[in-house]
Length: 91
Image 1 (cartoon, rainbow, N blue to C red):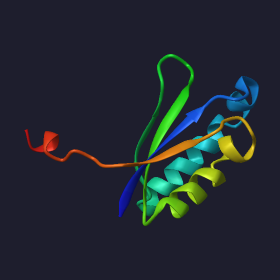
Image 2 (cartoon, rainbow, N blue to C red):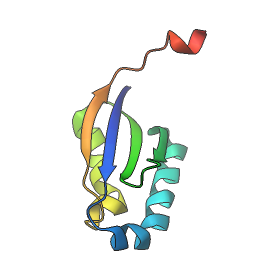
Image 3 (cartoon, rainbow, N blue to C red):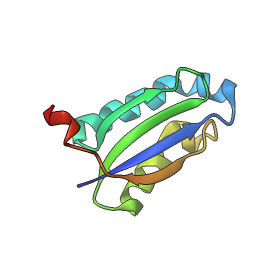
């Protein structure tokens, strides 16, 4: 599995409020399937970040596009493959 960092910048604040619960349920479902490493919001209110676990970029992008935030137009997404530095974890 590879890791993919997906930033979710806000496009529509009202839609973000409306779809928040659906977004969180979607992510929790993916946690249960093993497709999420972690996720959270930016404290400055500009959006959030999801670290997906996927076989390739196409799979990660497909998961991101199915997020209710993205599919509703509440958020955009920017995706990059992410190489976790495991040396830090062993300290």
